[in-house]
Length: 140
Image (cartoon, rainbow, N blue to C red; front, side, top):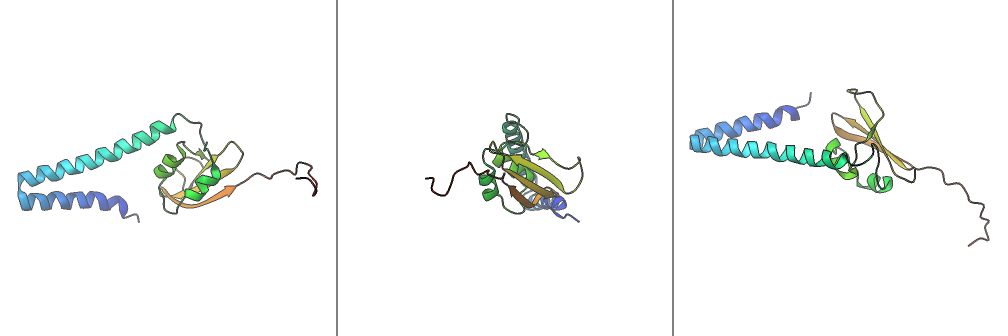
């Protein structure tokens, strides 16, 4: 069971109740204003990330190697989209867990990320084979 989805509303209710008990209407107004500000800041961040992602092709990243180096376990999908500035190419059907997305760079390298409950579980860097260009051992 995912307790994080219940934790934020529960903390909000406790904060509002404590503010009401300690300061009355003034405390209630201040706590409610703070909660509304927090929600609006999160919505604004989400909208900015998605607005930047609309300008790029689906599943595109400037450098898959750099993305691979920056990824950390438990990063959420929105954070990964903010790093790549593009939506990932979905590899699984919609609403199916785990969600798998791929980002590819112009050189053909790609990073495949697996998300469970919106959190990054694992990722893999795939690099294309570099063909030998006919250079011998004595070539510079």
